[in-house]
Amino acid sequence: MGWLLILCLQFFLCTHVRSSSSHFLCRLDDSSSLLQFKASFNIDTTDTNCGKLAYAEVSTWQNVSGHVIGLDLSCNGLQGMIHPNSTLFHLSHLQTLNLAHNRLFPTQLSSQFGAFVNLTHLDLSDTKIQGEVSSYISHLSKLVSLDLSMNDDLKWIQEVTLKRLLQNATSLTELVFDHTNMSFIAPSSFFSFLNLSSLVAISLKGIGLSGNMMSNENTLCLPKLQELYMSANFDLRGQLPKLSCSISLTVLDISQCQFQGSILQFFSNLTQLTFLSLSGNNVGGELPPSWLTSLKQLTLMDFSGNKLIGRIPDVFGGLTKLKTLNFKNNCLEGQIPSSLFHLTSLSYLDCSSNKLEGYLPNKITVLSNLTALWLNNNTLKGTIPSWSLSLPYLVDLDLSNNQFTGHISTAISSHSLEYMFLCNNMLQGNIPESLFNLVNLTNLCLSSNNLSGFVNFKLFSKFQNLESLSLSQNSQLSVNFESDSELFNYSFPSLRVLELSSLSLTELPKSFGEIFPSLVYVDLSKS
Image 1: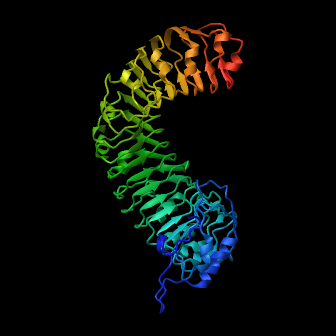
Image 2: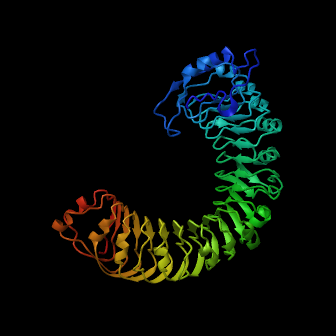
Image 3: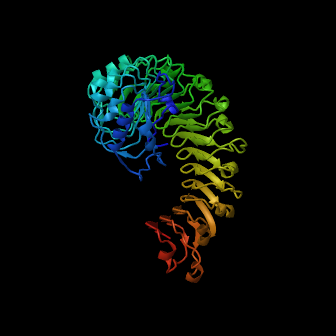
């Protein structure tokens, strides 16, 4: 319902006014204020910020009476400024106000917002409001939910403003400040303000916190906390936050910061986690087996881009809900534990860019939901098992930069594959015919192997979505282009990168440019 005035419906917007007629009535002055507020904006019907816009039936507003206690105008394509004298501020009984996903530039979060002393829910996310957050926001002592996210030019300059807000709003359960500017607030102060026992969800993505956190300054003891997002604070350094008493935590995302320390020291009591991302930090040490075993509810674990060492513990058998597991770019060594290949719910596995070695299991029967398998940049050896090329939903496969030997399986049946990288191994033999049934391929790399035999280049035209093809550095492989008359009936409309260096190549056709209309890079050297 756009311009959504939720009257006596959603959010219980109209109160019951006592009168002899005992009807749900409303006062005329609120109706007038609403109509004047509406008239102060332009409506952009092309704004697709929320997908399909939802416009309110403003024609009904003139009959509105009583106290308006809830107003939801989110995703209405509003364009214009909320002036300090706006009639919006006449709606003094508002309890919920949602203006999210509009264009209110250059509105400021001025003192007038502090007059909504009955507000419990305020959502101004993605409205392009700007300037300094007024200290009057601390007057909103009844707030339960506050969302100011996605307003990059909204600045928290005075620490005392945030401090008083969190001191006064003792019922606050949800705090969302993503992509506002909090770079003026010291992280040590910020953590001390956040110790509000009512908080259930905190989201602080990309707010510009910077500086070095000492271990005695970043303890968050929030017994009701269930969700904590602090990602993309790129200059926030020091020890991992201590969260041992936040035992209700289910979602923890502190990725893309510069935290350090060991996992067990800070998170040992967090056994209810369903989502855990520490990617892009400096977390070191070994993975604690006992703690990993306790994470029975976990669906996502992302430790990529850290400094983890030692072996991956073979304790994943009980993590039956795990869907995403990412150990990319660490210093892990040893074999990939067999328990990882028995996770029935797993859809994404990335152990690339480590020091892993050994063999992949010959037979797997339970990874039927896997869509991405990234094991590149290790020292894995042996043959590439046939199961890795027959997973029904596999989209991304990267086994490049290892020491795999033997032939590529002749029974390739992963018809969903789009990205297939087997380059920089020691594979030999022919390119199997079954590979050309992977009609969804967009990127194929078989370069730097010992492949041999003869291949008709026309076969690759089955991949009409192909963007990158690399067969280079296979000196025993012969690639044949057909004559111009035969070439006329096929082309590579999407191919942008073609690498055919250091192999046996027949003479190129004169119509080469017509066959590859989108090509931006080609390497035919030493062929």
